Image (cartoon, rainbow, N blue to C red; front, top):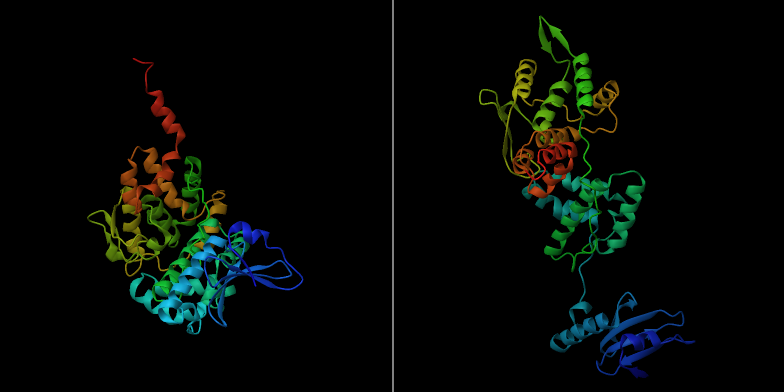
Length: 376
């Protein structure tokens, strides 16, 4: 049997022959390179007669990395007789089974929306939910991501779904169900957070006119036709996220104190925050309290249909519900409110998320610079 020191150069120089052959390393006994007639080259470690394991194929696995793995296995075999890689492994569970049997109970006890997150992982990654955890790798996920983006799913949505899957698989690693995180090399796609959509002054006027047209006056008192107007006006005056808005109950609203509380249980950050109510928000809530006096302020979780009609009536394009939050933040910045205060009102964990609003109003920056004299 041929022998050579299995360096990168030696592996590259090992040409295929008519029959498979092996090269044994001259420095590390048990470290072997097998070359197939097809040209496929595989690194092998052998710790006893007839006891061997394929480490991987070249060039995906380099000679240096293969040598390191072989040395570790041979050392393990020298100490314990049978290395860990040769011991029987428990039956591999599927992603769906892992989520339902292990991750879900943990999520229910430790996450704000544990059941929702567990369900979302299975539904978002349904195409490989019934594959073993060990079959999920970076290539599997990259194909999933490419397919989703091609179908029109936003990059930020893919990032959120991927983050949930990676977090769940991290638990599998901690619980000994995976030797290493299979998606450690998968990075989040870049999202241009600096581009933020907010209402212009003209769009704001058209939005309010369209809302007023939906509502009516009874005995001189403005009455909301339904939940849409108070939900929109409250959002644009408080910057609440959609989930925080629909979770509000009247216990969270202090009308005499002119304050609204976002509870930790419903906040994305997991922290309670208090938002002062301005004159318009206070007036809206007082009227809505007369029409919807108990329970949740907005018992409907979705405004999709009414929102679409409103945008059409107001002739506003490319504007999502979440952009009401951007409008709230941008209006504060343009009014001269410092970014840290904006961060606290929005409930951002750190200032990085809030910095996207620093670039929203170049005309205000220009006006500020114009105040400078010519060196006087």
